[in-house]
Length: 389
Ligand code: FAD
Ligand code: DHB
Image (cartoon, rainbow, N blue to C red):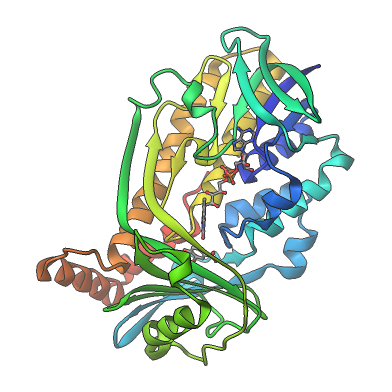
């Protein structure tokens, strides 16, 4: 089988890229290791930047988003005794939209067949070949049979642990990483959230976050030590801890219900500055990771997909390499902006083991700057809605 673009991975990066290419009449196939249900069962991001919402609208895959997305015009940063509200309407005139990654990926998967976007699920042992030629190939085993797809270009949208980054020579040397000494324990439950807007709470007991998936479905997170184990966190312990950390800042009661999902995610900043090797291009988590504070991961996957689709569209239309050569620079420029903000917000809101009183004072002084300076507030607002494309 032959196609123009073979995409590895059916997460947000691969699905958005696939739809963008199909909209330009470019032939492509997505090869995904997991089942559809597995991809949709991973509870991850929940907040979309305006550019990501605009992309879903441009693709015409916005029925679910329009019906169930929740626009928020601000969010809170709680600091012990006060909650600083960042007013997005007033600061930047743009809003965030709460709409889960599972909903985004489901909508994109549902729209795929009608647009000729072929997704092969349960592809085992994906391997890349002949990246230097215009007959680069992806091989895998599907339904017990060895398959080979030849392509002009391969898009590595296979997440942080996928094989594509490793197929880029020099990628390890071109990578930078910063690990945080804690993780996030998350819970999803069918109760109205205690606040109609997200709240980032910086407390003496550690960070806590109020988020939501709908007016009836809450998503909460708390900072836990890196070595925390899920089995040590029965739901009641988590609810108690949320109550303790959020209680003072919460505008409403923290209602409890059985957990629909609980999981622990490590926090990491990672950038591989080599996003291309010959006919292989990396996009999304395959090339970079942000800590979840600030909700940038999914939105960066979307901007990478936009840049890569633009470059590939020009390439297939004109045969010119220039746009392909420029992809990495364009993508990285935006990646570093989000990396900086996710790192800044993470440093601002978490308790780091070993932090000295000086470092604590710096956090408090920064929070004070946000509370009292409209310029600092605008910086936060501008970054949370995301850099322009
Ligand atoms: P992914 O979503 O990881 O998709 C990659 C796809 O490639 C997967 O479907 C995978 O199965 C597939 N794949 C992997 N290996 C292979 C292979 N060998 N062959 C074929 N396919 C393969 N961001 C936020 O903004 N807020 C959050 O709260 C948040 N929570 C997160 C929690 C966790 C546990 C993780 C891992 C990430 C979280 N993120 C969050 C980040 C956000 O979800 C990601 O940035 C986003 O999913 C990136 O999309 P992607 O398409 O690049 O990668
Ligand atoms: C989620 C929301 C956020 O505001 C964030 O920074 C990270 C995650 C969420 O809803 O999952």
